[in-house]
Length: 555
Image 1 (tube, rainbow, N blue to C red):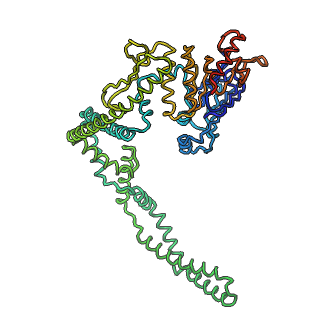
Image 2 (cartoon, rainbow, N blue to C red):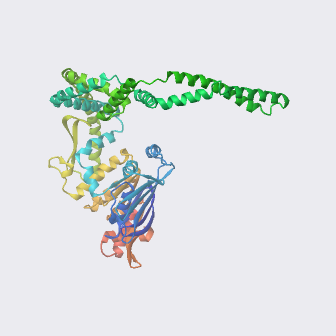
């Protein structure tokens, strides 16, 4: 539910704060006062396309903020948690549109992408105007509407069908790839066999470069290393008496410790440790010195091996550790290509098995859908009959198709608005009034199943009047008992039945035009309904008629 709306520097709106309530809220006012601008501002909160034209002239940016009650919407809370957005019973949505045309989206003060905003807000708010009506009536959405209406009656078989269809698509693509590239694959076979032979013959080892590098470095620096080892060993030899002096030093420390205990015990401990370290080092350095031999042939072989490895790395664009698993990949690809006929046969059989299962699941799904469709068809008929289309007929037209992601058939809603007329697609409805009523009938059924908590109608009652207008007003009110409904309307019947009435007007202030919103009640509401009735001049008679209309619609 949308609790409050703040609009700043948006189109002709300078600054506007609107508090919204549950039930049915009507926005009315003179043409051009800014009613549709308010709906467009709300549209920014659900991720509609932003434009620099939305920024008020002379300003740098426009801002729209909405506070939504999500206390009873676990799906929205889950979406926020998944995106690490701070959670609360209320959700603040903010959209900033700059004069450059760029925009920033924030939810609970955390910046998100426009795509993420759309995903979250599609669970909260629905805007329906003339364009959205056309979208609702398009056949490609009709199966989805039926599935939503089913409320899980065949979810399990639908999910199994979708998973099987995905397998079918992947395996079919794999088969097509094999069949279409026979000649290309055979040409590739020669290449990858050569690559496999070249790499396999080198007997590569993942850590070989490090070992080679160390040994090459030793041989290239043989003399320098030998001098350093000799010098180090000599320093620790008996002739230099370094270890003997350290031994005598330790003995002196022990004598001192007997006289002044513990004063130099740490020094003695470190010194004795150093003695043994140097003694071990002497033996290790001596062994290294005796093993340090120079072999020019060995150096040449090592450098040749290193060059070979570096050449292969450059040639294949992979470091040595990645070249080794690449050999296995080449071997697998060789096996696949060499056994392409066998692979094709196996894939064909596997696809046939999957297709059989797909058709079985599709048939089961179709039966389940048709049962639900009959119930939905009856509900839609009841709704359109209630909206003064007494002679209308409505049918759900299923058509067998090749397997798709949604099933093995398509669905199109068909209607005959008047007695004696043939059934035709919904989108072929010519009358604006019939189209509005059809849309409202569908929305009254699908509003709950779509899971929204608020719906906005933008002049969906265009083209109707009299008894039909009253029926549409009642239908909007019925929807508002389930979810919050906000609508722009020119119909006095809708305004009279509403729970809340907001009047939109355009005013001039400081040589600028802006929009103002006033909540109407009592006499002010009667006067506005009277204006909507008369269209030109409010008379005592239209005031009386307006008051009577409001009283008749008191719930």
